[in-house]
Image (tube, rainbow, N blue to C red; front, top):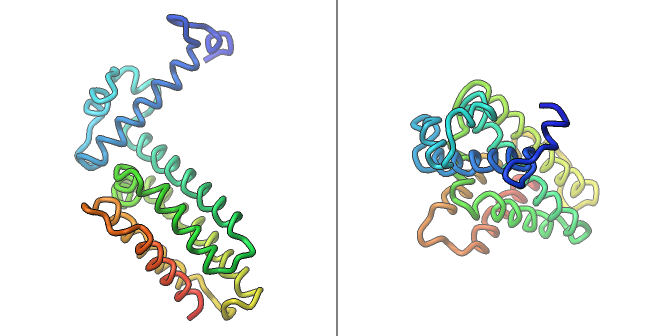
Length: 209
């Protein structure tokens, strides 16, 4: 679309703003549909009906459901990584236990506060397609590098023994995701402080063993 077209208005609203709003509506409805019905059982028609938009409008934004799932996952991951990175920065200098607890809290609050986000980001993406799986595994490596950075900093400051943390971190990341998802759908939910404590001890234990 040309700049001139992007600058036009329709019903008093810039076309670019209308397109952004429409895309957001598709993503929001897909988040609900994927979480409710499962990605494999969902359809473009269901997403459109939930969004109150047409399939023609859908295909102006996305090539198919896979595109939507990838964008949803990347949005969830970007937001949770930003929340964790901010928490780690604020807790810096207070020791590894404080850092891990802050990071764990931020991750849970970002991913699991909305059960739909937890379902899509932690369950529906797994094995959804070769493309989605590649994106998911690449993102898992990014998380692993972040946690490894925390471990290496703690080792350099003498808080934990130095060592090869890669396998241990990978194992714990998988376990954390299972616990976070289970917490997101539990009714009633266990106290979040208990979950944070358990996961923090698991992470620190893996690093320090």
